Length: 121
Image 1 (tube, rainbow, N blue to C red):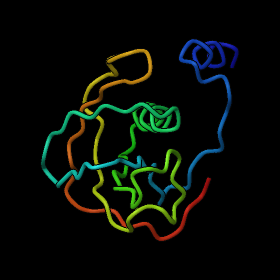
Image 2 (cartoon, one colour; image 1 turned 90 degrees about the horizontal axis):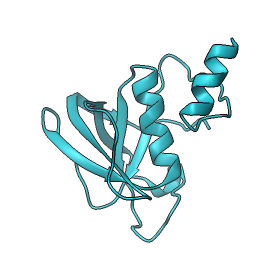
Image 3 (cartoon, rainbow, N blue to C red; image 1 turned 30 degrees about the horizontal axis):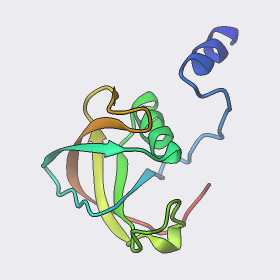
Image 4 (cartoon, rainbow, N blue to C red; image 1 turned 90 degrees about the vertical axis):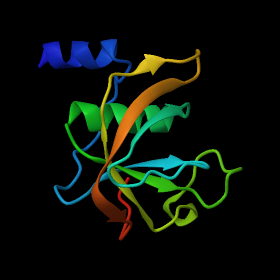
């Protein structure tokens, strides 16, 4: 238990989050980017919440939902500010620091789309 807490602190994730239901997906809001199924895409992410979402998807070995936000000016979009359909994707490669404020990840669009039915925090 102490070993897990130490690893989380090293990863910059000192806080714990409740586990997601089995039928839910981690959502990564994006601006001006659309990912299609089967396509490999490098993506730079800078929001702390987006980096945390991608890290959790890798840590839990889950697919991540790539969803376009409706208003590009919004820094932290709510579920209502996202399109309802996106692409399920797999994070392919480890995180690469691009600058102090952003990281680059590689994504592969999954076999199909994902739909926002309801949001859990």
